[in-house]
Image 1 (cartoon, helix red, strand yellow):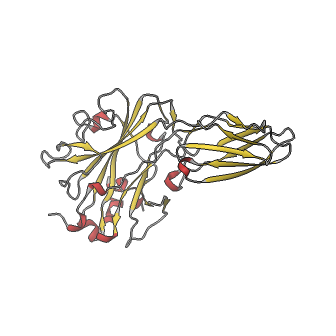
Image 2 (cartoon, one colour):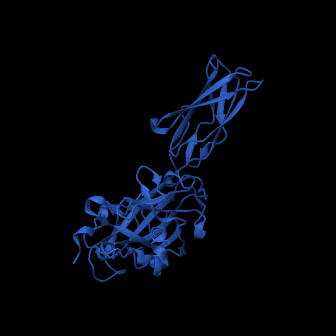
Image 3 (cartoon, rainbow, N blue to C red):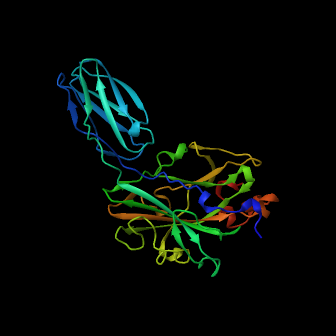
Length: 339
């Protein structure tokens, strides 16, 4: 019989993906009537967080120039300073925040003004969808149990110790999208193409939810492949927990697994044993375990993994430390039980 503390409501399992998003900024400078000044950026599309280089001409020689950057969605304004050279030109780099969307640049020296074109961006070309396996009945047993992929509630049939299947679908309908491969320990792991965070501890119930993860797999398919519909939802007759090991032909393992995290975007170096972090995360590291570093046009990258629902007896009796000394739990538990 399930313990009250670990009743699993799959709809509360928070999963977020910081996916690769293509940013676009204007390339054509708009010249004001009173000025011959113009500015432009070195590229028309950038990966999330990629440095943007702004160049300008027609400004006051040796004069101070102020560049105003309007972030996407009115998220804020950055101000940059630069000095024009003797010909009235300048080059200035800008490190944007981890905010996807359209950036607008305006430069002035007090006498001459220029801004990037008003039609300076297109929408993102790479979209992400996530789905979990809704369990409709407990027979036949895992991994053959019946159900379907859903983005909503996964039902009330799961029990302590069960493994829940999840799939992330990244779809590219535009140009080839580069996926940065370097890993950085910063909010949402800037410079990587994503991380997944999930409920670990709920203080109000003193309940641990997901404590182990395993079976990380991936596959690339065409957008015309019937295994995934146009809405990004997997077809349960083609992909399900029983077929995952054969359908997802590639395996990988995160560089970072089961580390504490908070929803404000901060990776925590440690946590209290009596008051653990509410969330943990693992990284999706491009180039790790042959994970691709790009997503080609008109293709989908599918990521599969399984999450373990914690067992009350283990945590109430302080036995979770045993995960560190027993295989495969010592691997599936990642940083939480290392050492």
